[in-house]
Image 1 (cartoon, rainbow, N blue to C red):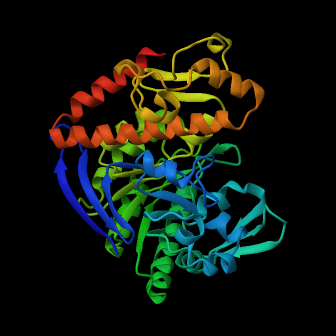
Image 2 (image 1 turned 90 degrees about the horizontal axis):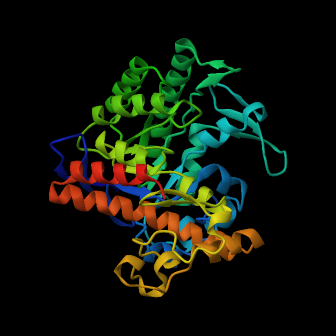
Image 3 (image 1 turned 60 degrees about the vertical axis):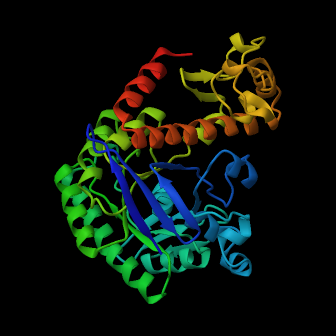
Length: 390
C-alpha cells in the first residue's frame, strides 16, 4: 500500500512537504533513509535508530539474497521480523550492486549473469527474480530492476547512444518488473527508476515512459556514479520536479548535506546514502560548521564535543542537552580521537550515531522550515554555516 499526501509547497523553489503512508507506518517527507545493506545499519542498534528519529531504512536485495538467503528470511516472515525493525523498509533491486561487479557480470536482455562475490557461484538476476526476492523480503517500497548507466564506459565518457541503449533496457525491465510484481499480488509499492545518464533528453524520455506506466512512486537513478558534482547537480535540477506532483520522488544514493538541501529545493522527497555511516567509520564527521577529521592530531587533547549544538548521544550524552545549552555529558573530541587511534569499536559506533543523527536532524529542520514557510532562510543559513568550516 502507498498513499502520498502533499501538505505544503515552497514558493521560492520546488521544495515540498508531505506524508507518505506505507504498510508499516506513516513517514514524514522530505526524509533521509539510513542504509542497512545486510539487514543492519552498521554499528547502530534498531533502538538507537528509533531514538534518533529514523523513519524508514534500506535493505539490499542482492546482498540479502546472497546471505542469509531466502529460505532463512522466509522463516522469519521477511526482513522486518529478521532484523527486528517495525517501521518501513525500502529495498534496492540489486541493479547497482550488479553494475558495481564490473567484469564479473554480463548483462543481456533477459537479465544479468554474474559470479557470486561470496563463493564464485554462477548466478542470474532478472527483473522477475528481483521482484520475487523483494516479495519475500516484504519491503514496503520495492524498486524495479534497472541497469545503472555508467558515467564512463571503457575509460571514455558514455556516449548518448550507449546511454540510450541502457535507458531503453531499463524501461523494458520496468515493464517486466511491474508485470511480475502484479502477478505476485505484492501488497506493497513498486517504484520506477528514471535513467538516461547525463543526457537530459534521455532523462525526459525515460520519465515520460515511466509515468505512462503509472508507478506509485518514482526514483532518479544513475547519479553519484563517478560524474563531476556539477553534472550531478545538472541532472538533479532537470529531473525531480518534472515527476508527478502527487507521487513520491526518490533520489538514489545522494549525498552530502549540501546535496540533500539542493535535492529538496529541486522537489525530492526521499534520500539515501552510505556517506554518513561510511565516513563515520573512516573518521570524517559532519557538523553544523563543516566536516571534522577526528584523526587529525589537533584533536588529541580537545575537550569539545564534535558539535556543540548537537543533541546526539555522542555529543550530548544520555541527557540529550547540547553543550551550547549547558550540557556536559557527551564525549570529547579527544576521547573519540583516542578510540580511533586505538582501533576500539566504540569509536565508529559513536561517530556513526553522530553522523546519522546529523542527517536525520537536518531533514527534521527542513520539514519544520517548510511547515513554517521558511525554507529559503534555512537553506541559506545552513549553507553559510557549513561553508565556515570547523
